[in-house]
Length: 151
Length: 151
DNA sequence: GTAATTGCAAATCATTTGCTTCGTA
DNA sequence: TACGAAGCAAATGATTTGCAATTAC
Image (cartoon, rainbow over all chains, first blue to last red; front, side, top):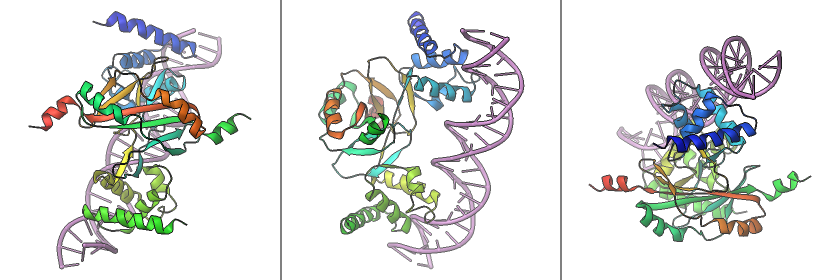
């Protein structure tokens, strides 16, 4: 059992939470522990529905916790920053990468050859996955937001 | 004006749509034209709310269209394949990349040094963005789904 | 003791669905 | 003409919010 190992890291995480002003609550520990013991990222929905939380923590509480945990840098949210699917015309044999401004949400297409393409074969071999594809997104603060930030 | 250019490509796109069995409708042309003239990807919500469609096409129609267009490979949907935000513990100074199975949705963490890190400085210089960060996700069919596919 | 956090219930909001009408092929 | 697609309205479902009760510090 990895009990002692996860316990130790859980304590560390809780400490980090408390250091940013959060209180040590049942719900906090449950959410952190759940994520800590999960081998892969979980959606808010999965977390809310998880047996470990279901019935013990109110969904509203969990949603609020996730937001606070991310705001405080304890959690990292994957996927397009604003969680919404984006559609764009698919051009045959042409793969685009994007850079997204985290302030104003503007999206620009990157003019460069994709640095990851070459890695796919290697990753396919290592992972055993087939039909490999990828998405690469950069995030940052765009020039105009950077400008308006510094006055 | 890029009128003639976009007109031409719009016609090509409509042809592609018709070749996969879709009918040439007002809503179809509006959606394609909107995306064609947009410099960056748009969310379903943005598309529904766009002045060019608002009031002319029913939201339900637009949502149905986007789904069909993606199923037929005309559009590409960006962001985590199932459109949901995923949370995971953020470990200081440690950046994870993932590989996602498009059949069963399983997510695995990739054990490799990130090939993109080195590019960030260059991209920052070219784009003028600051505080650069990125997300890289691979998609494919996992070994067990690949196996169950081929019998 | 006091302010933060929870739980519950009600409110939102985007997206989906059913069904009738319309328009393309 | 006939079937696919649109439009409208109602249903769904996830996330959010208000507020009173609870709990950590």
